[in-house]
Amino acid sequence: MSHSPQRTVLVTGCTSGIGHATALRLHQAGWLVYATGRRPDALESLAKAGCRTLPLDVQDDASMQAAVERILREAGHIDALVNNAGYSQSGPVELVTMPQVRAQFETNVFGLLRLTQLVLPGMRARRQGRIVNIGSMGGRLTFPGGGVYHATKHALEALTDALRYEVAGFGIHVVLVQPGLIRTAFSTAASSSLEGMTSAGPYGAFTGEVERITRESYEKGSLAPLVGSPEDVATVVEEALTSYEPKSRYRVTWSATLLMTLRALMTDGMWDRFLARTYPRPGARS
Image (cartoon, rainbow, N blue to C red; front, side, top):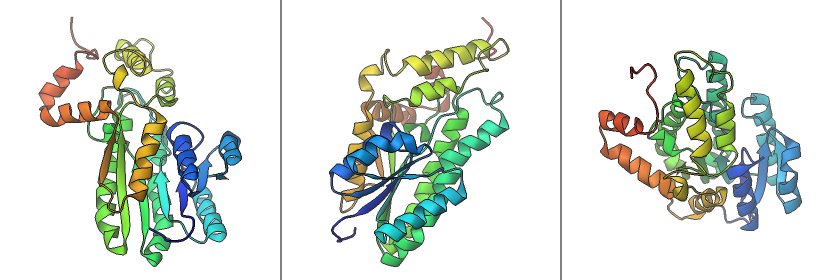
């Protein structure tokens, strides 16, 4: 990493949750933090804390280019990028509209990839840098009703693996952080994304249960004690950015460790039967 007095980091999705906690923690640790998000007004608390804030929409190429160019003008270089912006589009695969699917991939995959492309030339020229992608345990397992979201996180696993190898020779480390259940507004947004899908129809009862499980799993049930906080993820991101030899992957929370381990040990049939203890099967005859 850079030996300059202050290292510069660009963090996306800082309006709430993991991004907000990460930006604040890195600022407190002495980084020059550029905290970004689609709604500048939601970044005011970070600006007051001392972060530099910028509007950045990962679905808008011009917005991403403008943000990177401004940081390079002001700071001279970008030492690290934390790709955090993302959301969950829930719903049965058959019912999620193609505009919804495209928007999900634009935010969770394509925007992340494009922003990474924009910062890499400067990192390569300086032969140092860190890229931390905020993935999910959902990149290694799949819950019913979340196929489109999980597809984006599975894609992120592949992109991170390829990129890690391709840029290592330039002195750049690429790390994937895999949070489990984190208590943020994420679950509320995921639940809200089911709006219009819970009415009668072949998936009506199933979608209603997915909405309930999504809403309640962070607060009650067997996994509730294993839920983490945005600060838990921020702590791991700081470790990934500062370790001399960072791990390629970091799991965050016991829920991630438990569920990812179970999935690795189970066959597909065993996993489906495990899920059937919680989720109803659409179309199953009683």
